[in-house]
Image (cartoon, rainbow, N blue to C red):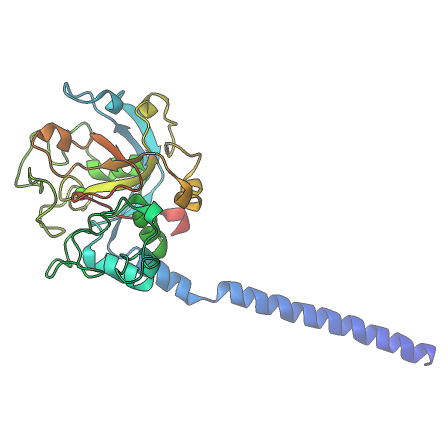
Length: 304
Ligand SMILES: [Ca+2]
């Protein structure tokens, strides 16, 4: 090959290289930008949710009958987040277990089917007939769900459970210092709290709070992401606190390995209405399932 021809080949190779690389870059950029489905999904995911504005609120209570774990009242700053307007219903949960049979109930003829024993207490979806919720109760909150199943459901719909601080901020509805979302007196026309336990009420039957959220108090108690720590309010970080982890993603990533108590909020049934106050804290092991315990989901705006 002559020297001139060799130089020409080298020049052609260089030109080809640059053209080809820019094409690759364009294709890559187009792929990373293009999915309009991301926006569609994002719009869909926040449908039925309320945006809670970022900011400070006072968490806890100094009610004369409050528990020590509700004290002291302390300032907490929470970034903006979305939270479900309603508790998760039986019909929503059925879609989850139909799509994820490993979270359904065991079939009697197949002991290896359904939810693993280590993720519930033996009474998972106790009120269901197999993997079907009770007739006519599609709009009732799902109950008898363990914390593991609640987190798994939330993951499946692209959401998560709220932190305890997010839950309390949402329940307060932007109002400060009240025992209940509507004032300081228990009022049976404002929330469902049958003294016998469980719920007889479909979602959204009682008036919403000032943020437009239904059944934050009553109907069913709701799982939160946090570990239960009775001392947490005495040492809580100011910004986006979560007990038992450095950050939310840690809990979600490792949720199947978590064994310690998890917070439940919004007591739903109690002969003593003192426990129905917004600030009242409760907790259960993550395997526990109860007739009066369900959940609702949240999502951070940054990961929306
Ligand atoms: Ca509730």
